[in-house]
Amino acid sequence: MTKPREPARGWGDDEEVLDREDLDLLGETRRDGSSSDDLELDYADGGHDGDGAYGEYGGADGYDEYDEHEPGHATDEGGRHPGRDRHWARKRSKGARTARRLLVLVVALALVAVAALAAVSVLRPMLSGLGGSNDYPGPGSGSVEIVVNPGEPGRAIGATLEAAGVVKSAKAFSDAAAGNPAAAGIQPGTYTLLKEMRAADAVAFLADTTHRTVPRVTVREGLWKSEVFAELAKQTGLPVADYEAAAKDLPALGLPAGANGNLEGYLFPATYEFAPKSNAAEQLRSMVVKSVAELTRLGIAPDKMERTMVIASIVEAEGRREEDRPKIARVLENRLAKPMRLQLDSTVSYGVQKRAVTTTDAERAASNDYNTYVRDGLPAGPIGNPGASAIEAATNPTPGTWLYFVAVNPSTGETKFATTDAEHQQNVKEFQAWCAANKGQC
Image (cartoon, rainbow, N blue to C red; front, side, top):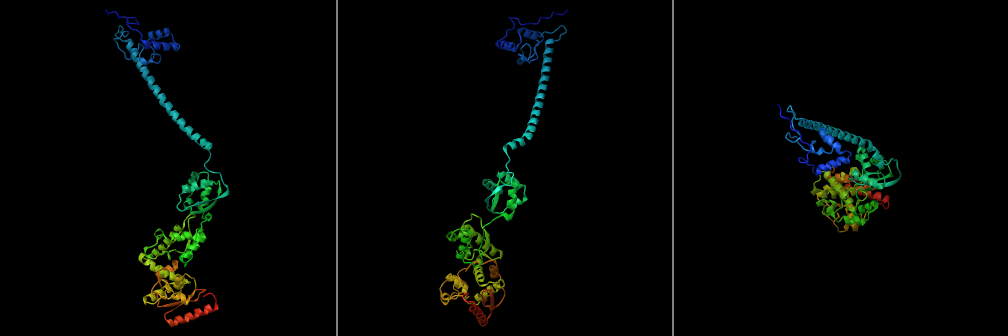
């Protein structure tokens, strides 16, 4: 005979009392629209699913874990625990619902991310359009002058163009330049462009060298230093005083040590494209650097450069025709080897700073470091600024025994050479006849 089952305890006043939190929960339930009767029915039916006012406790009886010895958890006649079975059934049901909720949350977040990416891809062009293009449609109008400086990077050129109103943005110019290989060939200079050009058109315009305007300064061969300064001032607009001042800072100009502090001879004659804002010192340095480069190219050692430039300057002053220059250099070397005084009117003229084909007796008697009628050997320094042809002639004289030369026709530059003084005097008579026929030119 089985022992009668002890009735399950209910909500006896002496066994269980609702605390303030329970009352608050009940109050919240009532505020949600449920009644006390509903709560009692819910409890009598085995509790709720954890989603209502009691959800935070985990069970219908307000306890977190099932305890078979707790009141209300008695076994039935077969030894089963109906309360415990319902408890674990609710646990399993709640776990399944939690897993489903997590899965739904993950899927929802994934869908939101995909939708966001799609929205960005669709809206980006629209938003860019609202901000406006960073490029002008072109072709542009009016005109504006801009300067591209030597070594200036593309981003700097773009900034200059943007500031001048040529392109709408420096970025548009940079992007267009990156897409045009010809942009790498943009040269320094001054350009006149339209305002509000399409960036790609501005790049193409600058890459076309026919649109480039560069201040060119030409210095011809044989000029004296003072004459070079005057020519530079005339062509660049800088005052002569700027060049004279710059010539005093010789270390800054890159002059070779063997030049003995004398700039004469090292202002290489050529056509230069100076930067628009270059100063006198920068221009003179460019010329000196070019002279030294020419000497280096010909294999002239630094300690031989000064002598080479002195001979080259005489060759430049005395020889008009290309074929005569190496022969004149040979005459100079032969006389120096004798030794014989050079007796050159060109050195006398430089000494007195007076340009002339011939010199006077007084000038030839003047005492200065350049008068080769009274001075042995070479003059104290170059008597002008020789070009590449004269420098090469001084480096490679034509083999020969000549000791004399004279230009028998100063107009054409025809020059005759002689080994003996008698031969030379015959050539001198020919020169004098030309002078007699061309009054005022000798």
